[in-house]
Image (cartoon, rainbow, N blue to C red):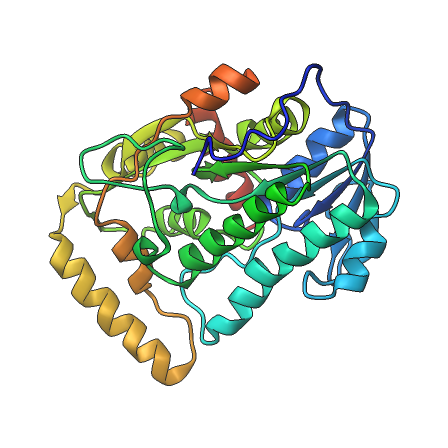
Length: 336
């Protein structure tokens, strides 16, 4: 997908003056808003119902599915950071996820075009990148919607297509694809944060042979700002750091938390069978499964990627994730 559109190449960096941030009540969006504030940017945060914790920013009420509300929120903004998403590995009503992730993104693009913003940074996911066993993926790895396993990945893939279509129509969109962020202020928590919480609670007795690219959420937030300032319209940039097996990540988490990492590896088919039963029962009860089937499906291959393009074009410089794991442990323990 990358390289299909090279509509604009910036001759100079774009300065962010006033920014709308969707998703500032969530993990990545909160850190994007915080970093913008630290740079002296006026921040307007879109929220359905609540103020933004610990951040002194303007809050406007609105839902991604309400085009009029998004248009009002975009007025007077030089930049839009669209970070909000329905990020769950299981939902009783998939239509809600598509309404927020796909149609919500369509509304943001329409509102940004109407407001004449200078740049939109759309936060996609590394899950929308083509993955192959044994290969390190990048922005050019071939992929299709048929390869998207589960409603979250599929909805984010389709939302990224909406963003790219908007770029073709003249909206100045840059796409970023974060890998697996870790760190403090993971409010819900995200599925990755839930792994950390479960580890701290002693609920991860074993692991499977899988792997992800992990990244400090502070680097992801910095990557959003770099994309706004230096990114090429119609291009996507992977924001990652370290390719680690699950066992390596749990060992590092053990070093930061003082807990013992699991030493038992279970076969993939055992995890799949357990998740299949757990998710099937959730379908009957409407309660979230203890083990989401989509999460296990994602683990079938090591989702390892390269962030070389972001390093080369944006000046993106991620660090190791050990300090992010330390901050996550401290923050979750502080939250009880």
